[in-house]
Length: 37
Image 1 (cartoon, one colour):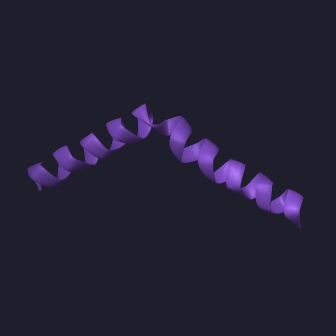
Image 2 (tube, rainbow, N blue to C red; image 1 turned 180 degrees about the vertical axis):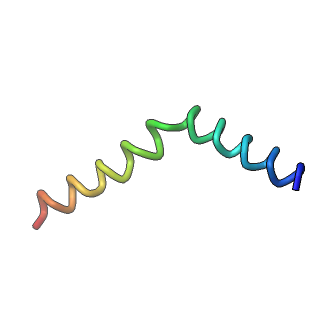
């Protein structure tokens, strides 16, 4: 389990580092789709 815990922490750090990419890109796609509809 320690290895999994380390991986989990690494993923959390990656999510925080790329937070804007994960949040803004889907929102941008949703807004584009909404505008098209």
